[in-house]
Image (cartoon, rainbow, N blue to C red; front, side):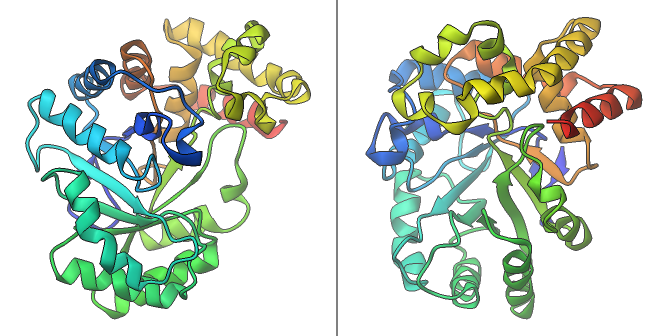
Length: 318
């Protein structure tokens, strides 16, 4: 277990992303096929059974549908409020910081009694300044509505500003959720990772498998791309040129996976959560029990320093 930022909240190095629990609701939910309720229950139960103790959701994932489905699945798994940690997100587009305060009870209602352990600003797109947003978050902390504050997709400078404002109120920024994986390593160059390490801010890696690209299955079976929901099918990462360019990395992951009797997915995730000490955690999603069990296997996979370095070097050639 690791600490979430400078809080006393303990989280596993892998959480479960629940974007796929949106059931096709609104534009964002259209990236995934709808899942039956029993499948979502089984996925959550498998996550808990395999050592995952926290779950990431959002207002925008089906306008609360994902939050509701997650709460239902946790109850079906026998979990009570406080047994696991929940991270959700406020959707800020064309909204002011006052909307953070106005919508918090709606978020809590969708989660059906489960507390908000981490409340995040989903995008740096609010009408209000970072300062006003963080003061609103501090108000929610002090009112006991949330346990910690996070942001998502913020630049290094905006992340530092958010942390400074919270610290002026006696708090601290817990996390910045950003795209980070072996095929997307911008945070290593733009100051986000460096500042997060220096300030004790957890980096939550979304899309840690690059929408499934790092599983290797689309390299070996390109026809599977046509079976994806259309919004994913035409994403940039599934362009033929990118699949070709990333093949040497996949081949390296396959060879190391074979040596450990592991999967390519597990090797990619293990590299990610061990490359920077305890700073980086990841939230792969899962649409089946088999996927969540495979992802969770990365928690038990320890690569050698030589393997970590080889993957690092091969990834940098992408």
